[in-house]
Length: 265
Image (cartoon, rainbow, N blue to C red):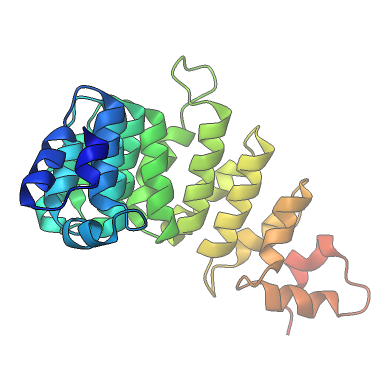
């Protein structure tokens, strides 16, 4: 039926496609959504319907998780009216299906990036992957809302039964590094002793981003770290890099003595 409706123009055909977005069969719902929004195959219909909320909301109301997720992605990709789709997107952030709640928070980041409810719901989720994905999205914008949730995940001890997997901890550390929050300097320093080398490296990067002129000492201390990736970050355009370069150009100065010489006139 969808293939026949694709070749048919008119309001009645569009309305039938909208109804089919909620079909119990995921392949039917996905095909109906594509018929309404695919600019390559159906440019005229997509131009008329793609930016309207109705087709995206119809897909987001599907009983099938794949179609709900596709509705979120299409709403974000087509720039659907934020006011009209916001409520449903926030609801889907709380969806139990991973493919859905991840697509929903990504749509929220695209359409309503400053929305408090959507990101609060993601950070309070029982699903660690959703929390981390929300943190990554905030990190790209250096949004400090990611700091507390990522610190919480990274602070769960190794002996805890619900400790996040290594991959999630690494992603959380990366998100925290992307934010580069000066108020989290002490936490970045604590992560330099983490058992995971990637977490340690991201902590070094976060430290290099967070430290401001006048607060370079943690960066200088990091120069003595055992890991080369951690030692390298203070030298990559951070506030301490100019002082480090000055010290290295001085005769007889070794990298282990930089922390003492940077304050010399």
